[in-house]
Amino acid sequence: MSSSPKAWRKSSYSASNASCVEVAVTPGVVGVRDTKDRAGGTLTFTRDQWAGFLSALRHHK
Image (tube, rainbow, N blue to C red; front, side, top):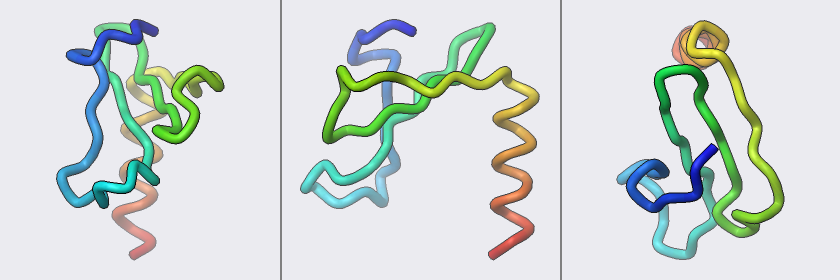
C-alpha cells in the first residue's frame, strides 16, 4: 500500500484528535491503518472482502 496522503482518507465524522482509521482503495486491494500508528502496519482486504465487511456493518446497526 502506498503511504501517499492522496491515497489515504478518513471519515469526515472522525474527531480531530486522530483516533480513527484511514482507508485507501486501490484497484486491487483496500488498506486500513490506525492514524495513531501509521507505520504500524496495514490490514489489506480484497475489494470483495471489504464490500462484505461494510455490508455486515450496515446490517448490524
